[in-house]
Image (cartoon, rainbow, N blue to C red; front, side, top):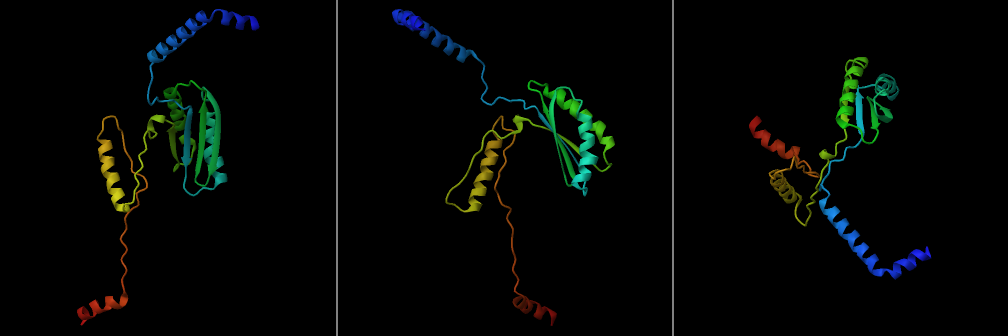
Length: 200
């Protein structure tokens, strides 16, 4: 090890040239590598849920989760499967191996859901949900200030229209806006004074 250090000190100009060469190659490689500001990363998870109104968690486990687990256990590339049962609903989370073909896996899951639907109660609803990063929000804008809430809501709606008008924007949602309600308080005694002349 000492010999290597001594050789580097004795040939300092060669070491400096190698360092400059490595920095230049690294910079050129960084510039040449294609980059995406918001890459779409496939997440190897698919959710399948089945719901029937009014059944208990125990019945949900037997009637909904059991057939789902049996159907999806033989899927190609499946890494693990997690099932949950609750009142009126059963769900299965399917984790696939990294590098999976998302389209093929989703098609296989949907075909399996169609097959297992015949084994479920007639009023059962089966939903297949893919985890897709393209559907996640990319930009969040927060409006705040010492102004009335109604003013903030108006500004948010105007900003929503302006953002949705931009090219490449799929959708802009306004969160935190409360629904306006009108409360009418009627004093019975005052109300009777208006009705009495009409009744006479």
